[in-house]
Image 1 (cartoon, helix red, strand yellow):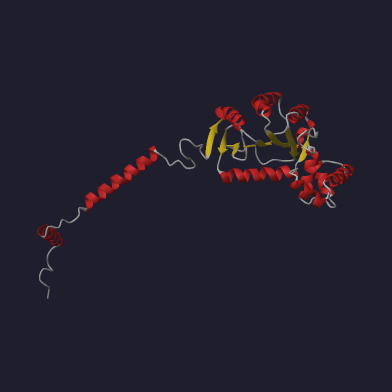
Image 2: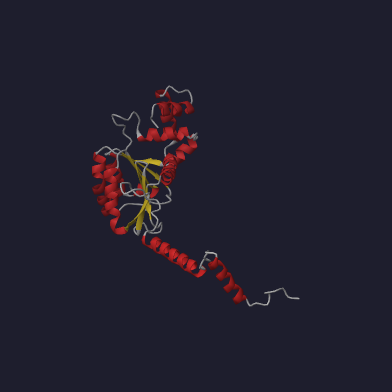
Length: 277
């Protein structure tokens, strides 16, 4: 036997439920209207995102963005600005082999004011530049302005780091002229600086090695002390620095005497304490 009211159609039951709610003063929510409002809100949010994308990596208006993509047309202007803003040191990877006369002229023009301010510069070129007279003349020009140059057989990318705070790398490794990315993120720059220092420690000095009035050792002597600090053997030092066995032995003995060291390790340790390396 059917219970009373069970034979009523679903539409009738819904109508009765609405009427019951209306009679008690309670209005059932209009789900279609709520759904429409939700869709409108989502659409508005999507539109807002398109108009105002999140400024990932950007700070306030008074701060530099943590990274910035620079088009090919603006690279030179940005590098000139970076050169003018450098306070302490610029460190660079310069792959690509020998420099053309136009590249040398452009580079010297862009950085001569920076060198005039006494900014320290360290550049790593490819070993192949040792056979190019124009590039060697440019290295001599750099040395005369206090810049240090070393070479390695290969470099991973072109790179410029200013004051260990700003790094410039190519947008595309295959073509450095397509554009560049300027990184100011502390983590990214620290990683690139560490890569530079590791490469620098094993690179071979190139150019003049005359000590200045404020520098107690020559560039070659500093490079040798860095090798000793890494625990390199004479054979390893000879291979990395391109010096003869006799020259290495003579320089090590002289440095140990100047540093009052009984061992090679003690010489490197004392050099660190004197801020020679």
